[in-house]
Length: 255
Image (cartoon, rainbow, N blue to C red):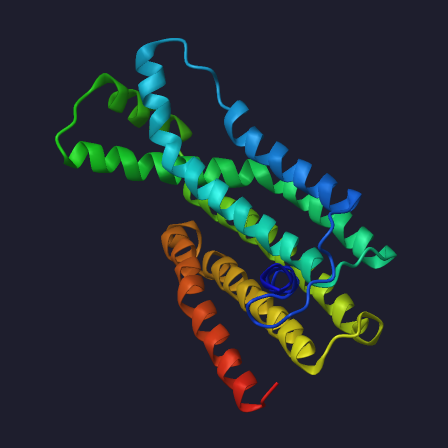
């Protein structure tokens, strides 16, 4: 009896959405492999240290690596949940998934460059403020100075980052719109249709933040890159607020 309860519970999400893709397909396995390869690129694309000082200096970019990995794992989770919830493998889903893979691979180097620079700058500044004057810190500062990003380059970098993330979220929106279009075929309940629309709205919200960031540097130039990057801090604020709003509304509708 207890075993049956746990088996049935594993087939339904915490918000009551019945899983339709419990078994992995070749399409998902291919995408998982690309995600793994992308995370590997974050490491192997860096030059191998030849001295202990260079090894210490390479640790300054570790914060950037964490940020990149967290973002990639977040996208992987979004992608995984889509197939877990809907289990779709139609032509439209395959085409959109191929675009998703392409954007992911194309996006990885701008992502690594931006977060490596920001992560190194944060850690190096922190170490210097704590009184560190090591050779490794000097090497890290020298690498930052060598990048020598000017105003136009910062503008271009922020736009590249924003467009990449915007297009990835757009693909996820289109995948969920396709699932919503096939609601009858998938036998989605009213509650599941409501949750699907919530997913779409949340991805549109994420896209709007990307657009806001891009518009800031388009109108104010690269000197406003810090504000453009800061726009993404709206995500952990707006997304949970909107999610709670949709949950409360769903309860009122008694879905």
